[in-house]
Length: 83
Image (cartoon, rainbow, N blue to C red; front, side, top):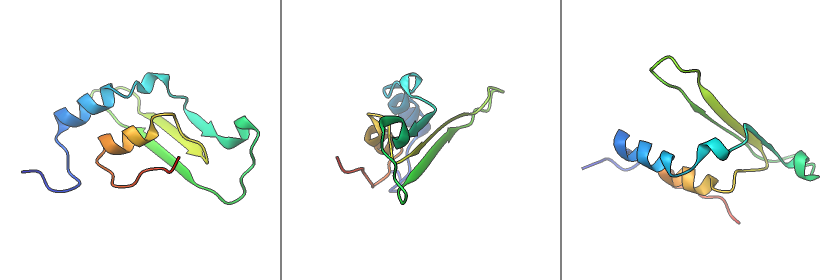
């Protein structure tokens, strides 16, 4: 039985594969959509590989990819973004 908040490697990789991370921009910023937020949220996700590939990082300020909640679910986070 898995502990709460833990996920098996194979399950995680399968869940990530379904997210189409290749479609994601590396930077999400509300400024790109004409909004300036002075006090907001920022986030980052970095994937490191053990096979010599360079790490891949995605970041954002007050803006998220369309399927960010699915990423949180894949990582077994209990928090979701409000619509």
